[in-house]
Image (cartoon, rainbow, N blue to C red; front, side, top):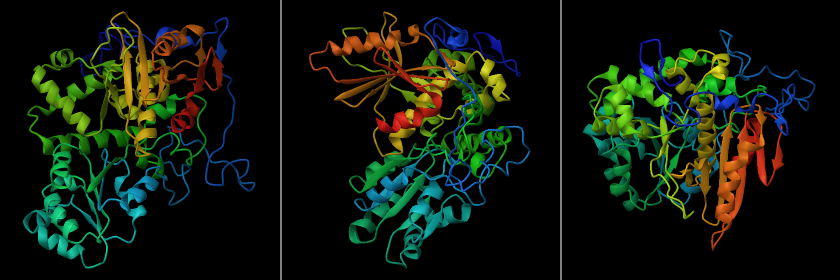
Length: 478
């Protein structure tokens, strides 16, 4: 919502003060024709799938777009039993050959269980979500592992964060019987789990992160729409695509059943209504620098409480805090991280954006688009078992970049523009930061990228202009 806009519950949800996304939709985001502009062409048809539903699909008709939003039941989305293939599967298998324990963390319903059971179908499986399994593991950990050890290998243990003390018993087991491998653990939040793994399994465990599917991972589920808004509105949780669950209804249930329940299991937040309001305010500040005092003040909680709640949201993989870059540009750079929702569908739900057409006109559409670009870049890194290396940049002089991927010898700069038209001014910050980096004594290899809401790729003054529907190919090439 725009600065001072009022939600249906009377909450005043504000955008970023002084931020290009905060008071309007990117000055039109270049949507109107401009001299020297690149305008997207409509009507381009692209087919994706597993050998069917496209020009090479053996004469069969293409499947309907997976991004239609008004159908009561989405039986046209996938073939029966179709499943999203995850890019993390290959790194998971590879690391399991090198480490006795591999831990896969990520948000609830991101596909961790499916991934691990598909990768290791021969291993016994236990889920620590049901109360009886949790109680048995907690009260008789040796008996729990003895039951799993009837075979020669390890095991897949789901939701390990519910009984983190099992990691100390697992340490003894892998040390005494190193041939038993792999043990694959999953966890839906990092609070407590990270410390348990680092203390008990240091040097024995590899840590991986699985987020909801990326654009590239979703390509098997129909053709992409002509604009990004249906995709951003739906988000990327697997069940919405694999089972055809209506996105709006599912996201309501997801927030109530998983997010609020998990929060109660992690910490005593006290007032759940205040916490819900705080999460809504975070959604209204997606794409903004983190300002805990402002968020806490608007939610009616202390700075300390706001800091604690932000940590919970980050540990639950609902948001990512993109750190500020501190390289040497002979500029005074700000140090605050940027807040991005990891799933734009959930952000839209919290902002009461009820359909893609509303998102396309929404004053925060530019910020939501930027958060989607940030999430796609992060997924491309994490799902290949690579470090994030993702930053943002803003100098006190006003120079600002949405995102920066720093891999040491190479730096890639990113601007995200939600409009279907690109104008020369959109690349000004990229070229300015690029010229400053080129002046460094040890200048890195440099890439400059503008990701926009249109459909035509091109290059302008060394800036690679990438349509939103080709972002996955770009991200996976870096």
